Structure formats: C-alpha cells, structure tokens
Image (cartoon, rainbow, N blue to C red; front, side, top):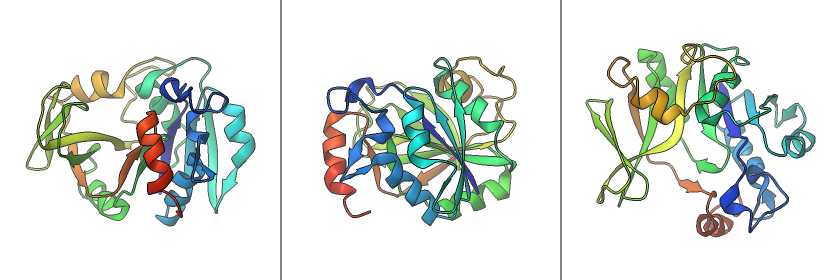
Length: 228
C-alpha cells in the first residue's frame, strides 16, 4: 500500500514552541512527530510513502533519507504553497498504485487501514475519513447517509457529530481536472464543489486522533503518544 503524507506546512501556530523546525519534526515524547507517524504506517503494512514537503524540507529529507523501516520514501517538494489540494495533486503523480491513502503530517490517526482498504476495493470511490466528536463546533460537521458523504457544514454547529479527520483515500488520477502547480483546497474546491456529481464514501474511524498543530494539543501529545 502507498500513502501520501502532507508535511509541507509552515506550522504558524506552533512557531512559539518549535521555531526552528518544520511542524512534522516537532519533538513529541523525545522523537520527531513524523518518526512516530511513519513508524505507525510501517506497522500497518505500508511499503511506499510520498512525502509532500515545503517549509524546511531539507531537515526532513536529511533525517529520513530514501528508506525508513523498510518503506521506500519519495519526496515531492513544492516551491510555493499549493494548498492541500495542489500538494496532493502533485504527490499523486509519484504513486505507482491506482490509489493512495492521504495523511496529514501533523496528525496522529490510528486508522483501521485494512477495513478502509476493503472499502476502497469494493467501490473504488474516493473516501473521506470522519470521526465522531462530542462537539463539532470548532471543526465543522460532516453529514453522511447510507455510507455516502452528503454535506459539509461550517464551523459553529454544536453538539455530537462527525468531523473530517483530514485523512482520505483517493484514486491516483482523481485530481487530474486540476493543473499541476495549481494551488487549491482539497476540502472546498474538490469535496464541496464536486459533492453532487461524485460519490464520496465516508469511513467512520474509531482510532486515536491527535492533532499536534495547536500548542494545547501538542502538549497533550507528549503524554498520549509516549512509548509509541
């Protein structure tokens, strides 16, 4: 299996904590966070990882090289910010299989990979991974019906519900309508815009979910991810 890891962000909200490192290299329980993430992907059976990089890319490349725990590492380095969509579009050109799992380089998600792979193999539809949280107000809500994502609601909708976990399974050529080098948001300019003409399957994960992108959650990760 192949995965794309989005690890090119500036990490603006974490600069006060890790001013001299790209966000995915922020130390968590004594290890770079990206090392924890890649170790998890190796345990789950991935054999090839495309790392989408930007800010301070050289620090990541020099740390990991072209192989980590038996996984081949391939790098796509953007010269200018391309947004989530543009970064994924460029990274997919390096993939060899007909689909790839997409992960955020600042999020730990203990994903049920084999179940999600079975879902893909049964339908070959793009999949959005969602997770139930007690209050969707700070995230925005995802609605589903019979396994299909039907709506994305703006932040502010309070109460129990599903949120976008920032993890996807996409066909290798699923973003070919967008030009290489074009900056765009996967969320607003692909998922929301194409919602009525493409079926997006939803996969509800029960896995542990920690986003280190904000200082409070980064502090929590020091405890939650210790020993991994």
